[in-house]
Image (cartoon, rainbow, N blue to C red; front, side, top):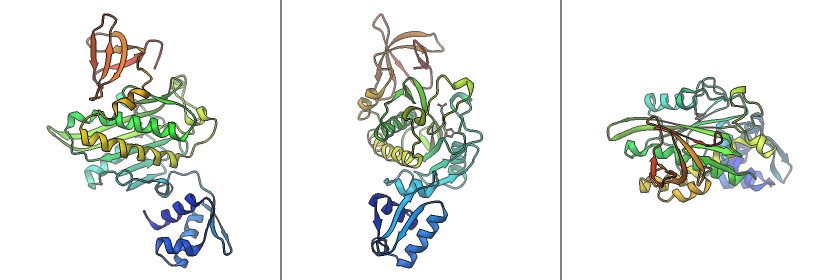
Length: 329
Ligand code: BTN
């Protein structure tokens, strides 16, 4: 962690005043250097009170998801150790793919943007990312896993987002298979995973997630099916803290998935959060639509659907869509 972020982290965790001497001792820099970093933080919009003898106290933070702010919340070893932040960009997924190809960017690099001008959703749809309100991130990974296992990573990210939201706020976020995060039947987050691979070998993957954090307005066409954390909790949320929370959850869950090459240790948690489980669903299979009851995912991430005559179908993500009988969920 760079020195400025470390100062920020110490001030945040202390909740009170920390003396210049203590900061200089803990970080191993001079008191003058501490003071210079404090000045730099103040220039970035952090309100830091400097009280004679008592030291420094963090009293206000800017509403930002710039690298330093996310970094000062982050407690991970692999995910987000390198952050690239943009006030505005076409699409964080596109950028992550570019740096994976052209700059050999590292495994775990996290791309964050405050606004996307060409945000991509699944099936070629547009993803709305208005400035300063949304969360748009893409995580670059270079997994040593077979290409056919990669579709499961999207489910791991879905679980990570739902768990982070549920641990930070007093709301209940569930997962609509395979990877939409929903609150009270409306979509809060979408995930788009892209992969570069050849037969038997993955070059890299980019897992993009878009969370409707502080949005209060949605375009007409998605108004009935979309929601945001601000609308559901009744207050603005700290986007940097949430991004860090997602990275921490993802690091732990992805570690289990990578070790097993399957979701066998994540399946129960995923199913417990699934909004489809034991609910009637309509499977929009190109070979023919059918309805049944969802029984949750298996350890490869396929949705198990039981039809009325007792037949069991394994629905594999990517091939088909699943809808609730009464609407989107
Ligand atoms: C969906 O259609 O549900 C997936 C939406 C994924 C949106 C995110 S926002 C960050 C990343 N960059 C993009 O262009 N798309 C993903």
